[in-house]
Image (cartoon, rainbow, N blue to C red; front, side, top):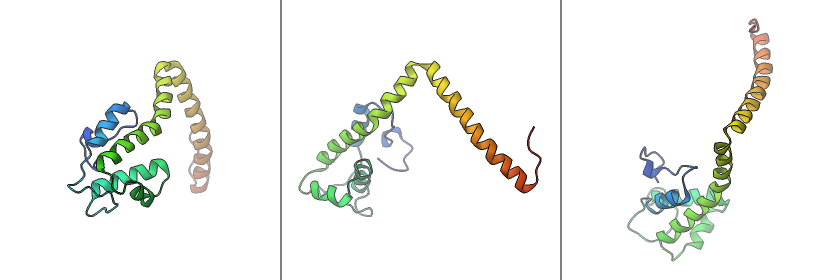
Length: 137
């Protein structure tokens, strides 16, 4: 789970199937120790997993360290895979509804484009006025 790796194996995509994400998480590079503790220098892999877990659950890393005291990396990775699956499921379901109904997706995009033009138009008009440009025709 490298933050900078360009390999698909090191990237959990939000639309990945839960089984695919779980496999990537289980395969995340850690170290030869068993202690689960946050130490970006000595344990960058475990620290990265703890950071992801913390971000997705709003739990402090120190709480996670305490919860996993005496447990192995496999426990952390298995639980994190479940957390990731629960986190992305609503997004995956919503995206799928748009994939199933391209016409609705086009309508949503058109509404968004209209709204963006309204907001940007007012901002651009103010900018043109302040710097002395003629407004676009």
